[in-house]
Image (cartoon, rainbow, N blue to C red; front, side):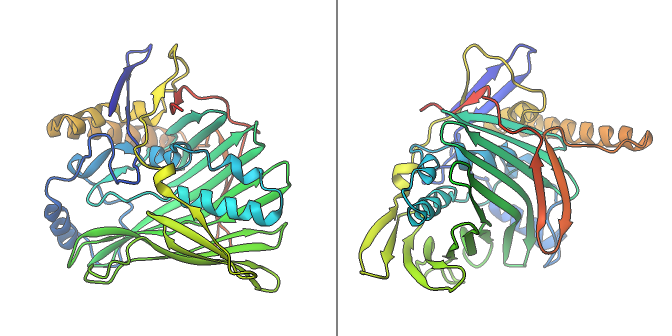
Length: 387
């Protein structure tokens, strides 16, 4: 479903359905000729190259920004997994809930299309119930996104700072997401630090997409750590291992194994107590991220910023959805030209751009990028997910 909404200043906001378990989006959009993209990469990009500055034509864009994609991982759910993290009676229960919530942020990749690269200062502000989320593109080169989410009812805070680095490796592309993701359970005084798996797109011999790599979720205050491993299928794509996940929960100090985790993140995930062998269902994605509704605007409409992703890219999205490629191309060029002109203006007067909503910490090899929200809480947003 697509919602084309007009705000007071006559600027349009295009809101589209989030990626769901089924891998569908607004119009179930797929690139019309994926071979064209593959040949373009082989022709213009060397293996090992960073694709951050590789410009995709609208033909290979999905009608939404990367900021919206990040935000939707958190607020677009049918079942509130996040508030459960703070309700566990003990540290083990809370860690198990955090793992289940973390799995709910993993969505089926759409092969052959990519979201827009956000412009500097672009924002996405959305709410689901009492959870309010704000994202800002705090750097353009390198591209760094900051997220702050708060739920004052559940005493929960999320702070993410991440840099997506797509790298071309000849027969596949790795979408590595560097940076910290922190989930703070404020009432419990616990902070869970985690990373993201790698989104891998295979080009040859059988095109496809999957999540791979290792994820660690660690809580310093409780001495608990979860280790998850996302598995892809074979190189030829016929092994059937796509979506497989294995892992464990350990005591960080002693590395004593407390629980084992296994299953498929896109089907069902189980957890086994190593003490008594009891196995339970940890996460069922069909209940959480299947057939997700389309976000909408509050009524009455107010408070949509000019920097909102759904407004910045509205004309481009409209062209893509209607398959009016010339209009989409011109609209995208206009957004990018405006970004370049603003950069020139700042450079000419020696002005250094400063993020509006976050303080950005510089990169270090040990900690990567990090950020600090300027406000303690996030306000309710004009964009909401119906619940």
